[in-house]
Length: 274
Image (cartoon, rainbow, N blue to C red; front, side, top):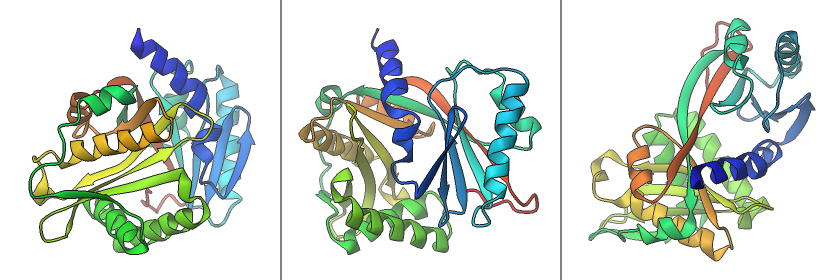
């Protein structure tokens, strides 16, 4: 079935090292990859599927925590778990070590041509464009940060990271946005072209509350699918909230698993999550 095939491709092509494409430094600890992001003050932990049980799991968690604590620039760890992984006790073990469940998202995937075939087009009164200037990139990223409730400082940091990425690897992604008749950004979203894989990833899709319910989010999904097809990608993948899931399913994607993020704060008094 398509779902099983997509899960197998997702595990083989998108997990572990490919998730570290923008990490300044990456350390391998046992079967996991740990990316250190000084600007975000974060260690990010992910991995391809692996089997482990008992005290080995505890040892792995403790080694990752020790690695993060040794970096003074880091104040928290974000660890991603997938529902279909063969280490069912990992979440409970992480909780026992002080990790707190942050959020669970659904992973959807599908064929590019199916997504394009479901595209209803851009609604009247709006235009779409690829963000190619620094101003447009910042506008698109700023809208996403505001919609997701990020602090002004965090929004500025994310803008700066995007601009730096555009300078260093401009062909690795495209940012798309929709403007209303007055030229204001109403919706935005990024598509990443994952090197060496058949996939493009959709990230940061956000729509201003005043412009929701008009098909803008879905229109940008279709536009990004066309960009993926132009880059030779055959499949789309996205991690989404429950709010976005129905829209993405109508856009031709299917749920294949869930991903749960858990957070460990280096300072127990700190509640920062990013």
